[in-house]
Image (cartoon, rainbow over all chains, first blue to last red):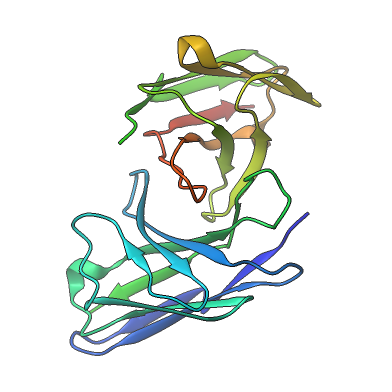
Length: 116
Length: 109
């Protein structure tokens, strides 16, 4: 099956710093990737759609200047949490759909962010 | 957007028991996936099933698109089936999925 990786798997940072999370499709090219956030014991909430070669599309209520998304290649999307604060602590998960896979999305293992 | 409701929210099973998880959605969809989230947070694809019935081992799923619901059946449950099961339908262009609240399953030995 299609494999999606994320790095780092967990990160602890101080309040006010920026954190970059990478999402890679390992065995397929993805023109579109998705970023989700999941708080403890809650469901996944879509944050934004990452489009290769163009600007990301953000869901309502998600600050685009706070969560910077770059999709510079067909296998890599990055999410940067800028000036992180404790309320940004969460589980961030990316997904991608292989071309020709009938819209089936595959998810990365997630990144646990803790902002102190 | 689509409203997605999963039931029950929590389910405790004795090993070997069968169960049915339900997913209701508010609008017509052209995509629906079931996932199992393991204790480490990894989402595992179970089924892509916008309509019809599929089976994979002890799991099967049925989506009745015209009535806007999907069912996930777990037979002969095992402790490794524990975790959270999510239903995620989608209808917008670009494969966007909306996740339900999940069903938290605990299978006791």
